[in-house]
Image 1 (cartoon, rainbow, N blue to C red):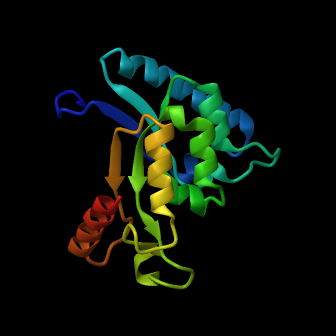
Image 2 (cartoon, rainbow, N blue to C red):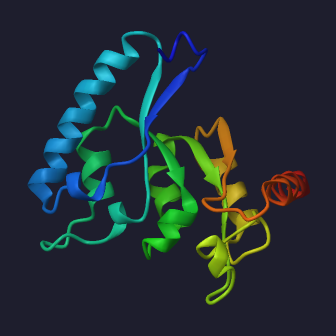
Length: 174
């Protein structure tokens, strides 16, 4: 299907809350499943990776971080880094880029509104208008990753045209 649509990469976009592992063994099993998927998908000439949200950065009961488990246990898998979700997961995206940048082949370009603002947009902001230091993140992505695609994203924009215009303007400012 991906080839029929002209896609060159497939990223697992989400895992429903009820299907999320709750311990390290569960995350290791998921990583093993993803590694098997990687083998099948890349055999067709496609890139395969994982797209994160915030829940992969919250410590498990034993202190391990699910995203570390995924990246360590499935070292062949690429990563579509959603940097704003990393921040919402209480982690530092610059640290993750520095440690795992070679895995990043795509990233999401979105922003977080200052605390208490944009409640009607679930606290998200148009790229370049929130608290995320996109100038530093863009420079880190360019210098430390294989990021070939930067996806402008807003999880709940009240005005799509405003969001798109702001995303383009911010990106061009880099």
